[in-house]
Amino acid sequence: MKRFVFLFCFFLTFNCASIQNSTPNSLPSRSSGCSEYVGSSWFLCLEKLHAKWEKIESSNASITILSEAREGEYIRRKKRICWSPFFCRDLEERVYSPSFFQSLKKTLSTVLISVCIGLLIGISL
Image (cartoon, rainbow, N blue to C red; front, side, top):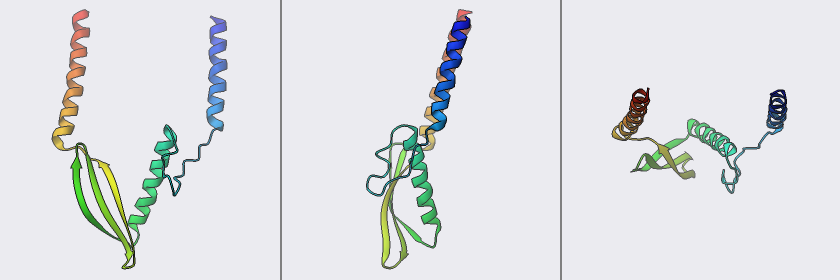
């Protein structure tokens, strides 16, 4: 038992030490965006990219929504951001926004599974 506790503490110490020393550079690149990152670095890169676009959109730019289409639980928007009549940029974004019935279906399926598991546990006791 002592050997197990010692080995557990040993591995835990060295694994945590290696995590603290790693600092992934999750800045999006101009050419590939966040496609070169994997795992949690990909999410950090997306957050930084999103924060960058929020900052751009909150400046003195005029934003025009060109089109908006629903694709399942996502909404695809095409926007045009113009800072001046000569400097505009078109971008396309996908936003997770389920409709009321889609979110209700997901909630009810989760509740139903939980109730079934609870009943099975109750019956087995």
